[in-house]
Image (cartoon, rainbow, N blue to C red; front, side, top):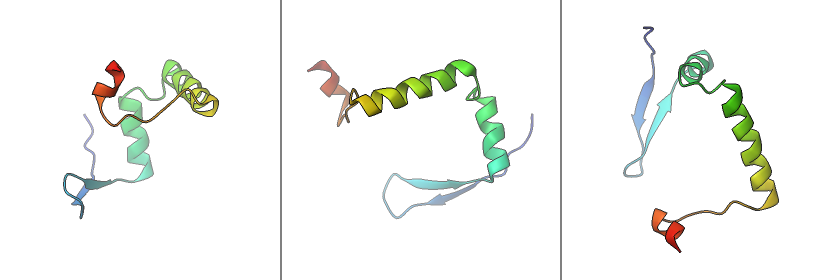
Length: 67
């Protein structure tokens, strides 16, 4: 397995951090997670259409789904 050099920096905000890596490493990581899969790319296009059509809204909590 290939090694991946990344930099993780703490953020000013509690519970957040910044991850830095170069673009080539990011593409390798995306490929390992299957993000270049045609089904995944199709789902992104469907999601963009849903956002444009207004069928998406922000949730504050998963409990909001029960309402």
